Amino acid sequence: MRVLWTLPYLPWPTTSGNKTRQFHLLRSLAERGHRITLLVQSRVPLSEAARVALEPLVERLIVLPRRPLHSPLNLLAACCFSYPMRASTNGLAPRLRHRFEALLEEPWDVIQIEHSYSFQPFERALQSRGLPFMVSEHNIEWATGAACQDRLPLWLRPFNSFDRWRYRRWEARVLQQANEVVAVSPHDAEQISQLTGRPTALAVNGVDCAHYQHISPCPHSQRLLFVGNFEYGANVEAIEWALEEILPQIWQNNPAVRLAVVGNALPGHWKLRWNDPRIEWVGYLPDLRELQRHSALFFAPLRHGGGCKIKLLEAMAAGLPVVTTRQGASGLGVRNGEHYLGCDDSDSLALTITQLLNQPWRMRQLSEAARQFVSEKHDWSVAAQQLEGIYSRLSTQLPLAQGSLASGLMGSAE
Image (cartoon, rainbow, N blue to C red; front, side, top):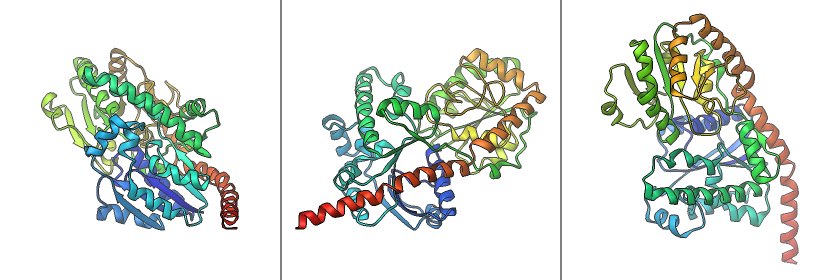
């Protein structure tokens, strides 16, 4: 199929779960023969490494610059326009709108928009042409602002609440227009259906199981591994909670425990705030396998956030036992006690990790069960098949819409 796919960021390097998802789905669908035109609005220029990684996967790669976050237009839009902040900072882009309109003159089997917050430049053209399209929503976006509410200055909190209200209205407006809405987890699909009043399709997050199949973790290493993108407040809050309340309790019982903190945009001042040699400030790693081999378990003390955590799936695929919270395991069909160990308070998490590090047989049980689950339910091939099913439904609607549009134009000419 010919697919027009829009993105509000370059999917390489894979510094976040969203980028990892996009890159692997592009790769999987390209391997299945789909002809993809990727239209990207990016805040960073296209690097040679990104070009080398992406161009083999697509028929055309079109990258347009996004204005800086602190542009006066964004500040003005935050106060004066009806769009929520994230929709205006990613929208109000005439060059992107014109390029999209020009691309719509070509025949497409599928028009795929990623994220409701990127939709503003495309709305008018899609409405005027009546073309069917799909929107992939990776989180319940209007709810994600709750993760940072308590971290904001008091004077900013009312605006954040107002912007969340604006985003709920915007998200409903976007998703109700789409012919197909795609969620990444059953829980998100249910919430989106409540918002739109229509069924929501599912294309799960995944992992390249073959990439991790030869990894064997080291249960005696005493190293905990946390991986996340620190541009997202939920990951920042998770590390702060771990180092302020959970790790001190673990160290009282086992001073040899180490924590490796891995991820993009790691705050530099953390090394001064928590100056402890048992904390390894790793930063972004393009390949986690060597560190996974020298870690005992994956620790994800997440209290906020939606969607489905790809780094957790990668840990399971690599055979790392997982200790997390109910929120950390959300979006998956995993069972607490079988595929992972989970609790929601600092005392219980500290006790769970302390006990598990002394139970290699239990770690092995969790590892084997989770690895099998991910292989069966969350390999990227599974997600690609689900997406192809959505493509098939959507492509049957496009000829009808294009025919109606052509008839309308002929009638106007007469």
